[in-house]
Length: 244
Image (cartoon, rainbow, N blue to C red):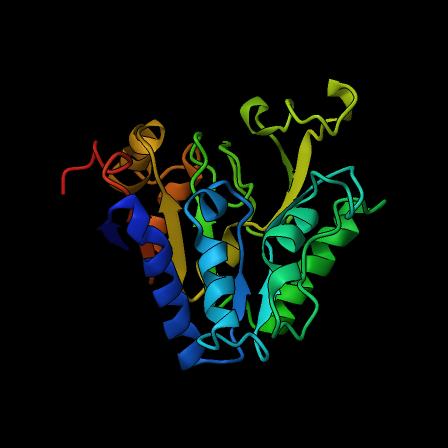
């Protein structure tokens, strides 16, 4: 695990440079995405779109895959992660050839959908380059803190702070998803490269717990300490409680 602390305005460039290196190494890379706030707030996806339109990137041979999706809403719902990715990235790429792969949270058989997604990951040879964020409670993907974290893709119970309860797209709190489909630890650890971005002083305590504390299922991100190639990109505020 490698930790980098950068000015916030340089994060999008650094992440794009790491992605560029990956595509040059393997144009057929399987690229894992994230639907957190950081890719939009810091212009990460916008920088990828800019570089692609400038001819610096080509995703023609690459495949995109997302590790999670909210359960109980259709794929075209305004709050679905498929909608998020389509609006902020996929719909603006000019060289996208293959259909992006995202779990189906509206499936009537969630167990079968988890098995299907695990098989898809295996068929693709798992992820070559995975972008991640860090939840305030230490989650990665939607692997929430728990006494036990499954190895395989599973249905996760969302913590209250991670449910989109303030979204105007739900008429009542009862409509707000309480679960997600998420990859398990096996897919995380089999990703050949992970790039995690965490910013802001509200993440500082969790950054210290995750990357300088004990490895524990109560802080899922702490397992990245064991990963063979994880790059943690922080701004100064997020890194403020680390001893570097």
